[in-house]
Image 1 (cartoon, rainbow, N blue to C red):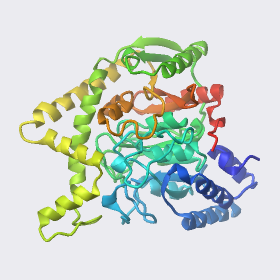
Image 2 (cartoon, helix red, strand yellow; image 1 turned 90 degrees about the horizontal axis):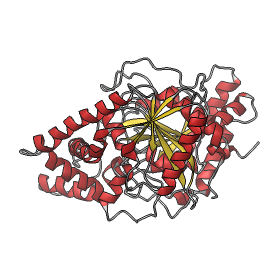
Image 3 (tube, rainbow, N blue to C red; image 1 turned 180 degrees about the horizontal axis):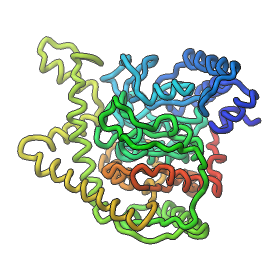
Image 4 (spheres, rainbow, N blue to C red; image 1 turned 45 degrees about the vertical axis):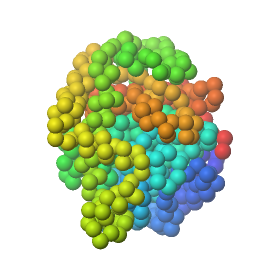
Length: 485
């Protein structure tokens, strides 16, 4: 048997059932791996004592012959904007230093009820605002494939932790590409489910109409097993969808023959790295040979996605982050004048990128500009959604690059916000429309950096995306390739 940290969740689950290993051994192996690769900066908090205690409880349940879930005893990491009772929740921001939540996020509760072992909280861009994980108030995350490069963001810690074999599974959040883009840059699978498919209750909000929780894993089967647990209606979340939730891991077959795949012209223009284009074209050829029907399509309002996103998202940021004022919880810079206390607290507590987005969002919502900017952006958002509705009348799935380029060097874009924002140019429209998107690792650049393809499906058709991802995994075996650390 290979080293435990190298095994997928499916392999570990199988070994647990065969009583070849214990959950405690798996958890201990993960903590050893986290310690060995600490220089990557993937975790902000680890909880070894409680994780080992939970692993012991899982081993006891198994010894008693209790009926267990597929992930009982399997380690999972949470992005540090998921509320938990046993660890701080900081959203990688100084304004929430050591915040202890009085309740848990629904996804965290579901994981515990399923017997999964929560190891800790992963690093992220502050309040999930960023595309490189360099905007954390604590430390940048490094890409396991090249530690001089970024892992992508904002869920860079969750993606890098899975890629580095620190943990087999993790959760992130995706507001404009924050699961899919780091999944692409770190060479793992990352899914943004349909908006409303997974509860957002207990998740620190960035932009409430765009945020969605989703899983990272090394294989589509592991992704499906994690989605089985976290998906479903939650009465505590007013945006949760009351729709039937399938068993994603049942009969996860690589179904490609006869599939109608659309290739949108708008995603293959200027700014796309040649190596990314080449790998995407190779993937399309492979799908054709497997019997898929590939056609060119148009999503004409894609050109407005970037500006539309940054008007809507920043407006919601301005509203959501108004609650952090130093009065009720979090950090406080004392001053006898209330207004000065709030201003000083927010100036010291929020990083530059968060402040930039608050200012922009406040301007967008201000008197005289609301209709011109925010109101118009909402109308364009409707047009973007209709583009997808029209496309899915003629195709079953859409395939695009996940990121226009591979992971870039640390510090190379931090002084150019617009260049950084373009990192998510391929993923933003998916959030605006609320459809599911899945990043699939499809190869490497000549420099050895991972490249991902994005699969986009109709609303609540995550299983279709997982089946196509399974085709890629069976043909490319990307899960067997690991960074040299």
